[in-house]
Picture 1 (spheres, rainbow, N blue to C red):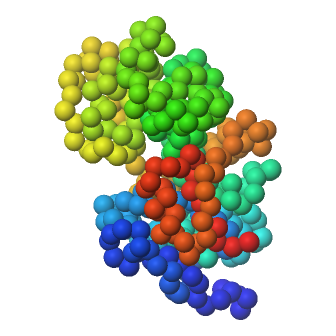
Picture 2: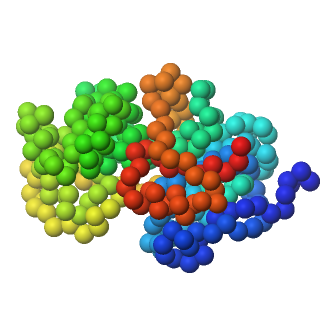
Picture 3: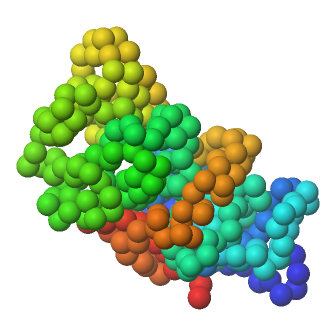
Length: 335
């Protein structure tokens, strides 16, 4: 490191597993840049539900990853590790990390960095990596969504939901979503959802059946699981694909699996955090080629719900857990 860099930085530590108040600012040494990494002076960091799970002790950091929470950042490259090519000191990037984002400095695998899209500021850029990597990998790679198909996502106003609605719509799908209020349903419709369902006042299975004329959904991205699975199976079209990425209502289900056989459904799922760097690098290249131009053209945009200072990470977690967010929650780190 150069003499211009401080020896220590402010980072948010999980002092013990528990409620948001266990998140505390601490002074710790800067992370060491390894081969293939870049060191980034962080401008902003995204706050995501996996961070909450890590804080409560249900989603530990992968082996070798930083114990500091935070899966996505934006900022400026200030140091290049060995074996890094294609980037230069001073480049403005956003990047996906396996941990360490809630801090003033963070190392990022160079292949998991993307340029900040033209027209976006650093707050908006920090809202991109975690949800855009997740949606591309699960909806377009694993779910194989095609133009003209019907796509559905639960939790339409979440970070994943707002991203999935826009990306699926931009690539020519008919989009259905669920959310928990009329206000949220209207918000999803403004983002491009063709059918936006308030699950508290409407039966989403009946609404989907009516809207699709009984055909059903080709690709369903689900973060709910639990008691939703019975109706998930009901809404699927023949040869439909259900992709699970979270289990907000619990991992255990009790459902009739006959529809899987009768409709020839694919029922799959994934997590991204622990996947190898090469896998994430491939997603980064697909995003740069296929999605970044749409962002720069204004056809897809990151949706920001609320911004907090780094020191207020506990308040950010409280806000996200309240369910009041419509879009991403961001920590402003510098600038």
